[in-house]
Image (cartoon, each protein chain N blue to C red):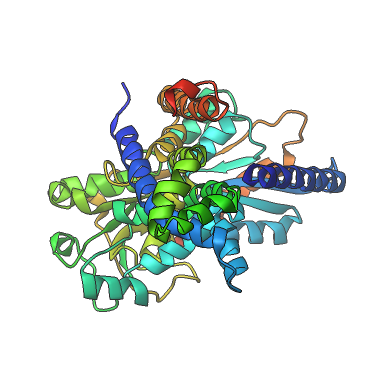
Length: 224
Length: 261
């Protein structure tokens, strides 16, 4: 029988990452959608970089940054007493960076796609920017929000390279499913690897199907 | 919009991939004076030297693929195009032999030795210090796939500290990643192969101690010639013979391996 700990850990990691991402991404996407700042293209590029960069690049730099042998890592340890390398929090930070474009992208394009009149009407009625964002804009881009949430979750579930480099493969702390699969294949336990893989396959299939059903309007009556 | 970019990018990547594939396959001659050696990560530095000596002697060049023995075995069983497999144990070469993928039964070419290694200058590595609070992480190779990891676990258990330090263990996918955890100072200390700390690249880096080899089952490192269809095995046999020659044994000894008399 397979060990369920990696699956529980992966779910936990993906959930925490998605929540953190949602909190970060709404202001970031809002700024990217409406700002006319000169540094916007640079920020946009940085946010999209994890799409094209090999995860190993990210993993390598995080490893360097988190290591207590380096200035940033030792500073974290001395000042806050935390060590991010080989820890769950380290994985969350890695995953947040790694999945950032999957959350920011859909929200940003959702906001850009809204007619300006919506926002203007709200302002004319005396609503603040914050109130407009939460009561007018966000409710109108529910499908984009859902896409962002689900993609970020699914992308974190599928994360491998970053975790491999900064995780240290510790059971119940950093050994996620993708690593467990890699491990089992290496140890020639193909049946276990198959069990994990099949589970991931089914989970991601269900998640994505769910998004396409909702965004395609097939489940419209549940999403109002 | 994001999706459109994705698709465009994937197509682009795919096209580049096809072009590279065509170029590469066009370059490769069917008759090659090259052998491809799959070597366990602990042999990384020693095998380089051995293959250089071999190339100098015979004119046959060597391509090295370095990874954990377990992963290489999985690859070979799935038909990876390697000529020689230089493992970190006997289990995996035997597995390959049992699958009828080897030309003959594997033989032990060396015995590996385990060391405890740290990059922190102020530390003098010792088994006793592992239980100290100053040691947060101890790097070892994944015991499921790396024989040096297995040996390390065995040694910790025999020394009665395993239960005390289990929480501190971090697992490298092979001895290479374990080395990387140690050299990047991500973990304070770790178990690795003597061949690593004696290599030109790592010499004089940090401090290490050789561990008592009575505390773990000898790490019998075996090698096999892989059966390749439609390929001449002359060069592979030559290398295999060279691996057991006096010259190669001297190199192995320089790297801290023990060789049978």
